[in-house]
Every structure is written in C-alpha cells, then in structure tokens.
Length: 201
Ligand code: TMP
Image (tube, rainbow, N blue to C red; front, side, top):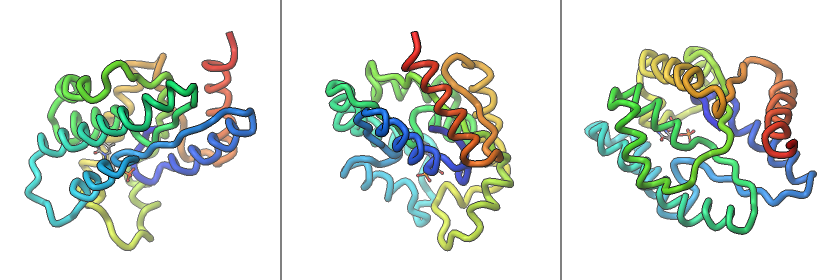
C-alpha cells in the first residue's frame, strides 16, 4: 500500500486485512520503515528531527537496511507459510521519496534495493493518489511532525508526481486509486483488484 502521508493507507490496510481474514486467509501486516525490532530502531534514526545533517544516500541505505531485515525476518517466512503479506509502504516509497523527491534517481534506488529484496517482489501495489496539499492538511492536527513530514510542500509535490509517474510506467503492477473517495468505495475497489489478481483465474 503506497501513497503520500495522510492518504489513508493504514485505514485501507485494516479493512483489507479484515476482509481477507473473513475469507480464511492468514494475514501478516508489515510497516515500513520498521516492522522488526531492528527496523524500528532504524526508523527512529531516519525520522528523528535532530538528524538534519543526514545525507540522502545515508537515508536511502537506512530505508534499504530496514527493508532487508523485514524481508528476511518477516516477509519471506510468512510467504513460505503461505500467508498473505500486506505492506504499509515498500520499495516504491524509496523510489519516489529518495529517487525522485531527493533526486537520487529511481534506477539507483532499485539497484540498491535489489540487495534488500532478493527475489521478493510485490504482486500488487495500490497507490492512494492524493494531492500533497490535501495530505498535509489531513496531518495538521498531528502534534509532532517527523523528519520527512517536515520537508516543504515542493518535496511532497515531487513525491506525489513521482508516484503518478511510476504508476503510469507500470500500470500492470501499480493500481492508482483516488484517495478522496469515501473509505468504503476505496475498500470495494481494492477488494475488486485483489479478487481479480489472486482469486480468479
Ligand atoms: P510512515 O509515516 O508512512 O510510517 O513513513 C515514514 C516516512 O518515511 C514517510 O514520510 C515516508 C518515508 N519513507 C521514505 O522516504 N522512503 C521509504 O522507503 C519509506 C518506506 C518511507
């Protein structure tokens, strides 16, 4: 599940998890960065507002390191047990935030992340499409903003544009949904995509 901050990813993940569990599936939810003890420590380093000096390459490598741990400790074992894994963000977040937002280049991001991912690739990516301004507005009531959320509007606009570009480049694996639609409508659309790809044919 991908999209800018405030686009409703967590809400949709909860609904999808409940839906899949009602169908009898074992579901594992993983959030990025984090999802493991090591990953959560890395998350604290990445998002700490005190570390304004962090270079973009360090940031990219820390996200990739947290991801490597998540893949090896959580995702691969879950898949081997035939569980379904839903990730709250994955490698496409690095592609747009570090590749496009920070300007490191999408190819560099995928190259670095190949080491973290090995042969694990998402079968379906849902992109919750929301204008950067709207995402920021939805987060307004949050008391403390993290190091990424503190970036200016132009950074967040580049992120959203980046997601749109990626979705246009890879329409077969990235499905864009309008995040301003009602929660239940989006949920139905996600269920439809999941059923089409995983349950039919
Ligand atoms: P979260 O708020 O969705 O938990 O994500 C933390 C922040 O980290 C969010 O602003 C997006 C950013 N992020 C990246 O910049 N690159 C990544 O690879 C990931 C997973 C998240």
